[in-house]
Length: 249
Ligand code: TMP
Image 1 (cartoon, rainbow, N blue to C red):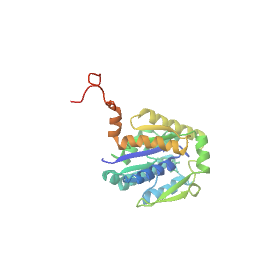
Image 2: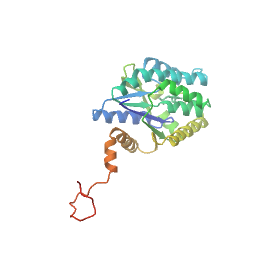
Image 3: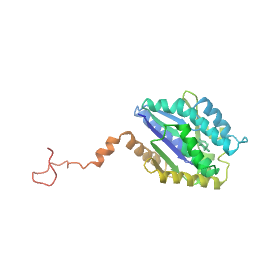
Image 4: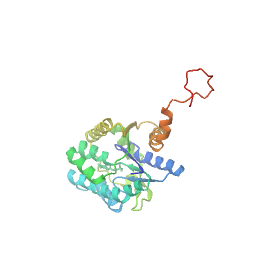
């Protein structure tokens, strides 16, 4: 597909929402057409399921998995694929890496089943770049409960700020072992797919993390810049005839 698909992943409080909003702002300044979505959410069904999934209401791990995938199918078909086909940059605040980490490594559900459901739900919409913001669960959950804001999204993609404490805390409330398993899962994914995943230490300042994210995004947005940097360049000072640098023909 002609667009560029960037997903943010990581545990609670790692700064995905803050960083994805900042990246979207930067693209807006550059007048680069883009779409910011979050998972679960971004469609009428997705937002409805998000509310249930984040609440503390009863839910088996298997049903939880299927609800995340149902929200994903809607988001991919109604928002992500049309935006990518139109050549836009899609930024997703979580995508299928979260299902592998949380429902697979965290809840202990079968990784092969999760992988097939992910493929079924996402189809050809696979992130070109996944940015993993890595942080210890102790630090992340403290941050998530204390400072972070979230955003709500209507079916047409409109965003509105939302205080995190307006949402339920099904996952924040799980024990540290769960979050450590999920973190290990994210790291394994990043290590196994180094071509498309980058891991960034989320303890850095908001600005330094954003700079790193922008440099990785830029490489994907403007690959010709990277190729030009990699090519040996002729010296800027005129080279006297007979020097070693080959002359242009
Ligand atoms: P967040 O958008 O505030 O991060 O909340 C989404 C929560 O849902 C978060 O705790 C991670 C969890 N989640 C999963 O467990 N599996 C998934 O596939 C996704 C997308 C999110």
